[in-house]
Length: 408
Image 1 (cartoon, rainbow, N blue to C red):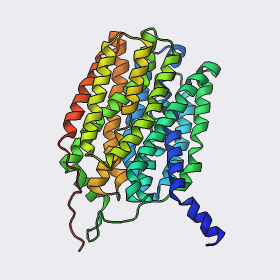
Image 2: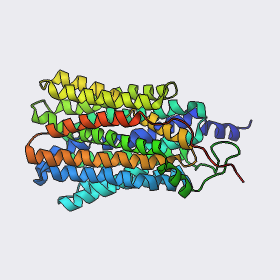
Image 3: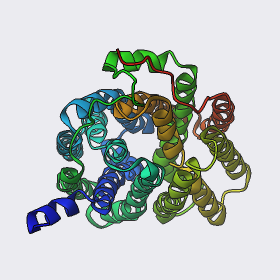
Image 4: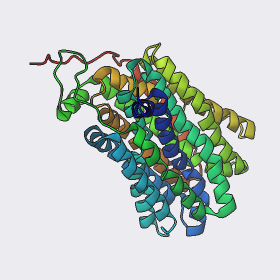
């Protein structure tokens, strides 16, 4: 093998693909995990209520979710690399525009629409879809866990950094620094570029058009249940990420613990995501998901009932971290099991849209109900009820491949 062949083999090797995909996930998740730290200084400096900030971040989550299926379609057609480059540039532009958005409309455009579309284009779900396409089937569950864990590592690293940037340099400079980090994504995108080949799930089966794939998925009861359950994940995660730092400030816990709480969630989610990825290959995925949602509901209920304190907050953050994005590997694996990898980015994109509708409501209702009642307690208990609902709807999911017609 000559040097050129060896170099090519190295650049397309499993370790390089894993490192590149995980780096994309880390750099995508990191900046957006810091948004909650900007709530207090930006609303104070601009004279806004919390609902204005919350609505912008809610729009961000909705725009991200609405764009994700179409971003998946573009990646399935044109390749992952192009989508990641475009998304990261838009992400950085939105963060920079936030620094000059002094009225609610411009802020909702920059922090909401532009950043949301940028996150969709550079999303860690793109990296996971690339893993499904580029890696051997026996490595997918572990790779999905590693990719999701890398996103958590981004949260663990960027949460204290983001808060430190704000405290040391002010929120505008902090946004400039976060925007600069987004520009590293194109470097790693090159290693996971490419698009899926037309290939049926099994030999002898006919390939599908994207319209046929969507019709098949949305007509399948298990897919419908998966979509409904993932809504809850978005609601719980987005509400906690954006409003937990402000909630801690309200109950008299020093601001530094807001940063450490979000970081702790990210750190423990590294363990949770990898574990969920491994367990997805060894036990029924529907039961794993049901357990995760039920455990989240219990953790939130206990935290809300206990007297507020630093120890209870740190324990709550650690437990939520274990359960945080651990829903992603089994959810994405269920889509792959049922429908194959041909349109995985697209089909998971629609599942993820449901997640982001939940994110929109979690963030927006948090701000709206806080401004109305002066407390987050209603939304905390709503998150508990939704966790129980999600555990119930995952139980009937059928974990097997959807039958396909034979090729003509």
